[in-house]
View 1 (cartoon, rainbow, N blue to C red):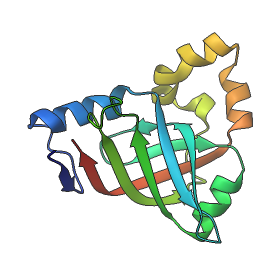
View 2: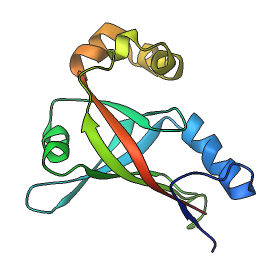
View 3: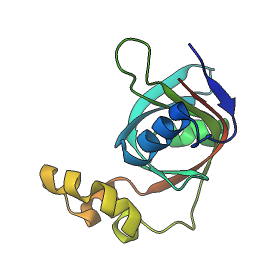
View 4: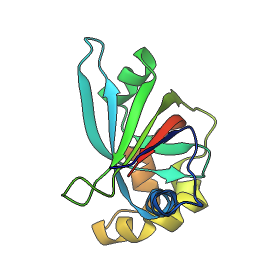
Length: 144
């Protein structure tokens, strides 16, 4: 098993190109935050990656409180079920009060509007339900 272990993705390599493709196209990542008592808490999230940072819109929930208390997070994409096609991003997160809402974010809507429509959600409903913008700055990418 080989792994890249850097703060960037080598999109010129086969494995890096695959990780790049998945971070651009996958709709769900598993985000892990750390509770005040040190317990890791993992939940699925929708995310947007601009090749520099990640944006997640969240409920005002334990996830947000965890980030305020400890900004270290990880994002993980599902693998192939056999230990391959793994993408792990470690980083620091912050609540960003300056980011536009999900209903106003054209890139986010381009990625997730079909899913919202399938669920019968409007962008405004989604933005009201998930009002907290979380920015994640990667500190390490691991993929194999």
